[in-house]
Image (tube, rainbow, N blue to C red):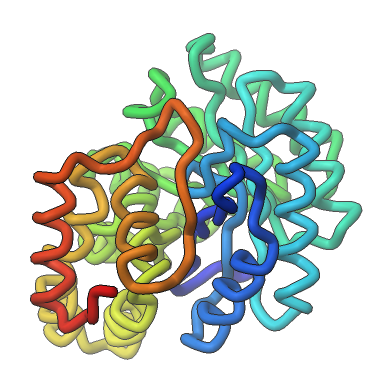
Length: 294
């Protein structure tokens, strides 16, 4: 499976009564397809997956696949701190035709290196679908090491890692050990350009929910052997990317979408609306980029 380019970690729009807003979800997917993203990732962190019931989670994946209609890749979130639940989500994604699954390292229970290896081994050997390992220690309390990823390369369907560890040295070591056997995708918008310099192939992006053309242009320039243009685009995009993380993701990006009339809807507790101070900062950044606030 070839994974390259800009994949959008899509939000889950909610209605005012708190239910999943299917129409808004479909509209957002169409917007992203029209902008030329390589794929979408439903039911990840940005999709507030931790607040979705498994019934809702599977429904969002189904809607995403139905709306995409094979026009772009769909990497379905299938992560849990419970291996059995991850297996069930992976099987659902495979049965419904997802191109791949995104599996976060188990959170809260903080497995050892061997526990992480056995978790991903269980999924890889029991469900025949390409797997993107998701490493985000700031969320999970556990960091999957390069040597563990190297061990996981023995499984042909473990095809990529979404890296959000924030450590360029660690990411460089992953590429040194795994080479082209394991695709590296940035899981942190501000670090996409540096990660591509260490062998990365693109990004699973938050900022692409509102401005997909910007990371797409940067990635395309990099792979067109125009690193100076890619660097300039990276630096242009950087303040907007950073603004997506002035509060816990996805609070800023959903707030931005609502400000731009994109109907992301409210949050689910324990996430709450942005503070007025941070919202004012976000609005100022959006206006500097030429967005019209509604």
